[in-house]
Length: 118
Image 1 (cartoon, helix red, strand yellow):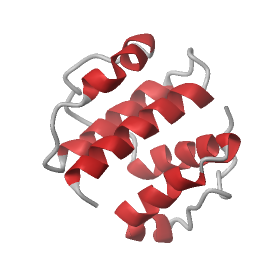
Image 2 (cartoon, one colour):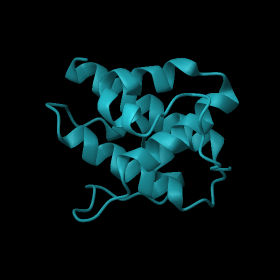
Image 3 (cartoon, helix red, strand yellow):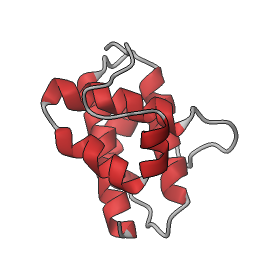
Image 4 (tube, helix red, strand yellow):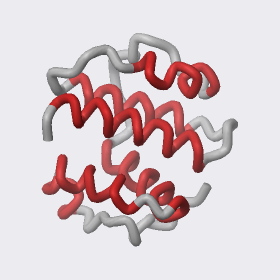
């Protein structure tokens, strides 16, 4: 997956989390932070402007604060819920293509939401 595709996938993921979880769910802000930390590991441009409305609504500040983050697998589980609820199977498929070892290790797919609820 190219770095441009990583940028697009992170944007799509941020929008999916925002659409599927309540505005007052503080986990979404942490998940978004984890997505941008992941993106920082690739040769990506500053893309937060694409979803500035979501970031502001979710109380997210820039730059992404350094330090501990929720594990990426927690974000992928939340995205699995979002994908299942919206019928967007492509979202998890793209993440499984990008980080296949992580998805395989936790047996993650669009039908496995590990009991995470909205």
